[in-house]
Length: 280
Length: 280
Image (cartoon, rainbow over all chains, first blue to last red; front, side):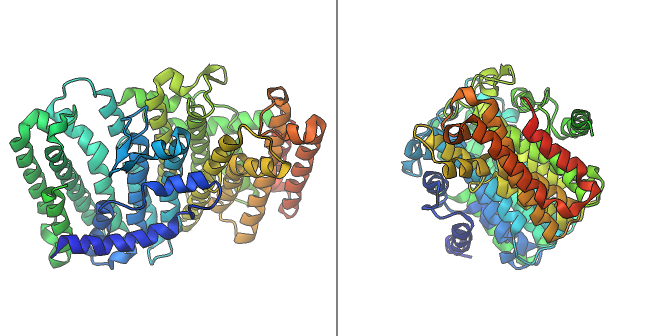
């Protein structure tokens, strides 16, 4: 499979859905709505949404059924970036070569845009018209809400900030990575499986797959960012080669969870390999 | 009915639910979890939750069925206060006589605590075990997500901040009040009705009731805060007596929506009257 072509095709679907899910940039309050779109478009690789769609496919349902879940995961991811960039957090002026939301629109609007993007994630999922039972949709929504909460995404960011000065041990670093990065990958996979109608066993496997691949993704990220020497980087604890090996181990661990899924999980496997092998 | 006793009894139910719904203050990351609880406990009057419970009762269901909806509305309300108090927004140091969250825990933790409270609102509602159909719960969740979004709560705060310098016309002020305050009252009422199993007509009536009573509540608030001379106060446009009259009109408009509901909507009517007559 040509993963880049596959990702581009899936990203186009997700972009179209997101375009319709967000109020137009000109709608009042115009600065808020423009700020909400600022980091959503143009997007990145839409990797997390692709995992949601592929997980739905892996459990035997049409991937389009997970489009709202995919978009909701992306909205949570983007809102978290908007808030992480704030002056009181990581204080970043640039992201993907463009001014961050608070630089472009001011701090208050950036806080509010992040808040509204999070609300919109749940709105999109609650109102979705696709052929998904209400029970499955609620279960997917619960996956996302848990991944976005203080025991996952937000808790990981809080721990990352709190530890920013000190030296971290391997277990602490991976705990932060699991919360800050892997939980949302896991929600994408488990949520995609939920709306795809999967049973509890398959959902649990795909959640573990998502955690392992999310950790592998973050390890690969740490290798790419090795020269930044961040406190919460595996490279500090394991070195570049050790971190590369850790990424490969986590990838293998994730792929083992998919052993019973057969041919239709092949896109999901390819995405996992790509998440580790990518060069940016 | 003794409204204060009724409110105290309902607040105790909501508090118990919220206590169980939030991670313990000592759980890591401890500052984040303590910050999440800082403005939740001790709470205010829990007026919005009481509306959700009474709306459920008004459509013929036990009020306890709306407990998760009630708690979720309160979590959204509290998160919005935490973010509104931030230095980049209203920059308030005190709320209800105590230090605001960013004063007590720092700005980064305050942003994150608000973010996590919002996620928790949706988690609570998605995972609720009460006897509510999945369809009804999803519909209630959609009400809350819409009320929390850029076309309601967050949009109202953005407009409030944007206009903070200028002179506002009556229609602009009420538009902001509708978004920033009334939408959440409406979601409490419509969501309470949804989980209570109400049909579309009753839900629509209770939503309109919530908008009218939310506007009446805000008008009463503006009278109580008249000496603050805020840009977005009805007192600027109508004077104190005019604003009092406006509150009474909105209350009457709200009560008209309940005309067909009979005896079991009596607590809801009493709450609406209290929301306008309260002295703090």
